[in-house]
Image (tube, rainbow, N blue to C red; front, side):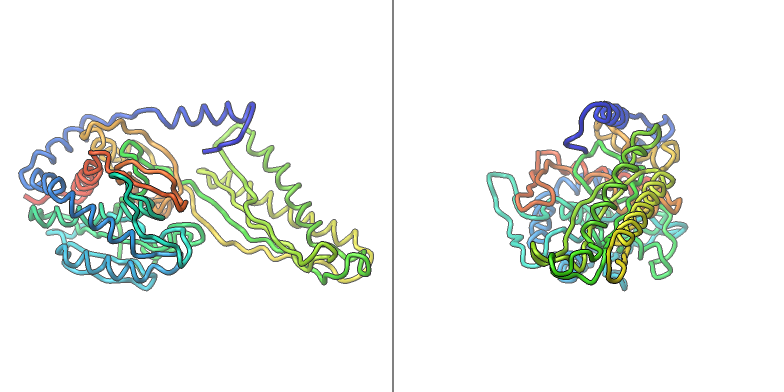
Amino acid sequence: MLLSITGTTLKLYAQEDAADKKIVVAGKQYTQEVNTLANKAPVKKALQAIVDLQPQTLADHILLTEIPAPPYKETIRAKKYAELLKAAGADSVWTDNAGNVIAKVKGKKGNKTVVLEGHMDTVFPEGTNVKITHKGDTLYAPGVSDDTRALAVVLTVLKAVKKADIKTDADMLFIGAVGEEGQGDLRGVKNLFSDKGPGKIDTYIAVDGTDINMIVHRGLGSHRYRITFKGPGGHSWGSFGLANPHYALASAIHYWVLAADQLSREKGVRVSYNVGVTGGGTSVNSIPFESWMEVDMRSESPERLAAVDKLLQDAVQKALKEENQLKRFGSDLTVDVKLIGDRPSGVEDPTIPFVQRAIATATFFHAAPILGAESTNANIPISKGVPAVTIGCGGAAGGFHSLGEWWLDDGKAYIATQRALLLLLAEAGVSK
């Protein structure tokens, strides 16, 4: 959500947000299918098991929250999660070469594979205090909601399946994924869909966020770069006339913002751009030897994302050329353009059976389903044409990605877990 925009742009984005918040209804076929499934004896037993397991779900949630999982250092949490999945009764549990924890429950037919996944990593660096603080019924700790609650949901769904002795036609994979946040760049789920993954995945359910109403069926793609201008550097007086990396960086930002702003105002799928971090230089009286920035651009449209990316590349080269032409002596500046994040975008037809089932399962639990776009682990399967959605883990939460992050069981958090179970079974098929 944009927090500080004005005028025409604000009006345009408000209209887009309103369109995203339109309540959707599943086709009659899928509504009946979900109702029939939910009334099967073993499924009713599993749904009740989730209610009965609420204290254990909360205990698992707290246990996992208090195990640090910094970016690229999810190993300790992964080890514990693997133990919990194994104890829950999975047929097999393993950790892949990327660090994903994968638990398999075999189907009777094994005709397809359905995934239920939450990500294990948090945004917080090593050394962050992740001990839970209780304030009434509210839990406070970095990462307590995003996405640790989802791990507890995935685990409880597995427990409920086993307690109800449900047999499915399809194989089911219960996964704790690595590398969803920031510069993790979805590395865990990328590995799942590579030749090093567990095999063909037919349907993918990611659990992220809390809202049971939201169904993410569109992948918000992003490109992220670290761009570094480099030069000899020198004294601000004695070496005056050398090419200055800061000047080149400033010009690159200026040219990109002007061109990208024009693109973002054109009619079409929304596109955003941002310069998030800058750095370089050693002192006020020194010509810097390097100047760098990290930038982010996003769109649901691969074409629009490619267009704003090209504007960045053009702006960087134009700024480099101009600064080198302005120098009075010394060597030319160089520039290093490093891609540090590539999340593919994509859009799923909301009429496909899987999205319809996601809508129908939300409606079954009296939610008001809306379709939306986010940047989540579902981006990867969506971009590859594999049916995928991201659904919420339930409860109330706030302070995401901050030290004051919190999560509260609002008395109906278990419903999100029941919904995840029902959607999983709708895809996997309950054997007779």
